[in-house]
Length: 265
Image (cartoon, rainbow, N blue to C red; front, side, top):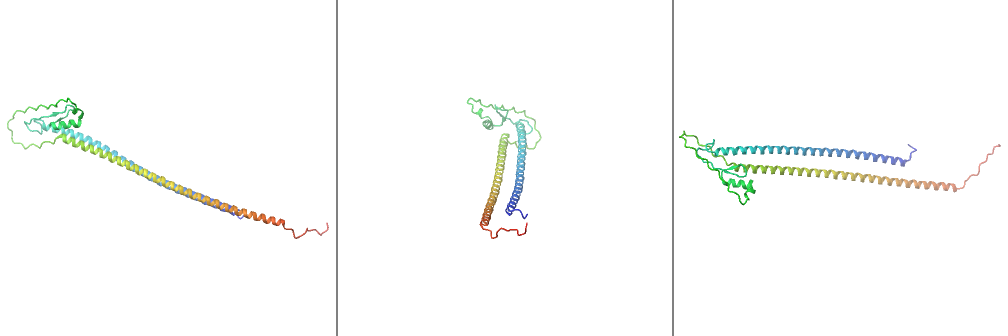
């Protein structure tokens, strides 16, 4: 290595340092990308779990609505049984009077409930100008008096009105559905904003690191070019000095004459 130019050795060592720095930067960027990818995968798994929970709650809500409808029908049937004369829950001799809807097969125990039902379920029928009055079902004939029976325990209290309960169940179901939709929309919006914010931060961090590495590499290139320029100038000056010395040596006259051989041929 004695005969190799020192400037070439310096340039070679500097190139080795640049290569090592680039390899280290590449490994660092790969590790950062891997960690960010794992974090993104974790966020996706969390989002899938939330979606699965929402789907499960939707299925439970549908089952609850179905059960509510069945319960409403059962309560309606029980109300009819308690109002029918001679029914299992009614008193003997009670006259039942019903108001039936002309649009659907539902019946109500009072005109007020029927009008409320028409306004809520059949508003187009209520707005008709020549609407016929709603007939009231004829009261059922009272049964013939029966012989006195032994004292029986007092009958149970009358069942609550089915229409009020049905309206309450409808309002509760509607509020539940609206709350579920609102919660799902808020969760989706929150997850979307979190993913967008995380993606923006990842992109910004990657851009900043890339700019920093590019600036460092550019600074190293600039320093390398400056050092090469200085070495080139030094070599040029040394070459000029050597040429000047050679020119001076050629112009200087020799101090000794021509040497002759004194021995005979």
